[in-house]
Length: 449
Image (cartoon, rainbow, N blue to C red; front, side, top):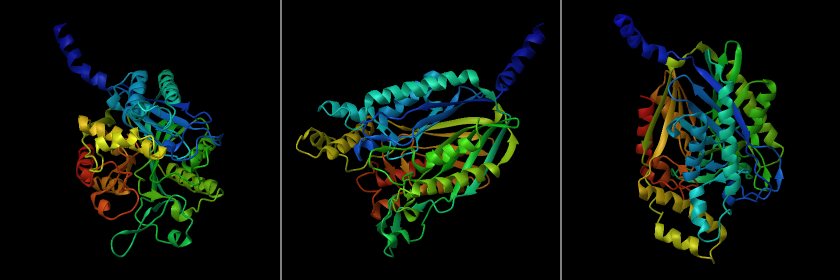
């Protein structure tokens, strides 16, 4: 009997580790009501719902505490807003915040969320001007409830499919460089000037990558990853998931019963500006081009068996250095100045929220999901595409996929050289210092070790 008990105790870890790998998929509607501020109040408030917005995710079960990946059709979720989403989803999925990754697709005709900034503004009777905090709380509850309900519908995962396809005539680098090594043109998402559109694509990642979780011969969920700003035309109060959301929805129609979830990669300095002049007709064209890439990546996938022992969640917390321009006293005075333009006061509140986090010594989670020889990076901010390309070079013989636009509190994250080149992203919309590249690249390196 003692020998039998010893054998059972020796084998128990193996039995526990051999729990079957399962996945639960969920979706929640996060479309804002009419009148909601959109794009951090940088465009007109919502006056028309053109497309519904969704939060879509998966819960992976069987490899330790559940792992949750979520993609949301919002412009950005930052600071304590990001914490609130992760905390609620973690509780619903019976896991820890550290094992939850929440990302936005960054559509501009969509709301954002930063409770910390709203609390700052509330002291000056400006609560709700940046976004609608009451609606944001309702959206969090909806997403968490959907995740909790999905657990009862979890399905076995027997195989993982990994695919890759080139996307034609969508992405282009926003920073058009001159011969002097400085930015000579900023190619925004909608670029009217034909001379600027005619410039070369510049540095991009032209490939869309996809992961498919299979139960035997049935695809349960397809996750796609592509780096670009997702705007076609925007700013007139017409709520929309824009062309990446429409492309994803086309895949839904083509493959009913399979959940399609799209993540925006490191597209901070990438837009559709070369191929888009802002005409309304371009949105479905860009959506079709991206959907073609999604289909091709799925169709070309290599499918291999997978189980729980192949799954690993990695997470480290890093410090991102704040921009020197963020002076807490000056920002506080600007927010309190009733004669200052509202847009400047709102922007200052977002700046102050990040500056206060940095002063407290708060760290930022960077995460990775390892699925055998596949690595999926989950990273913060509006990352430059250089980070995504560098990550791929760190593991040239494996598949490395990147989801950016996680914690949105710090805004744009450029590479160090970009901060001396001029341009839009590394100006006053970036809340980090130029030396941000070193700790972030080190963090990525650790995740991919």
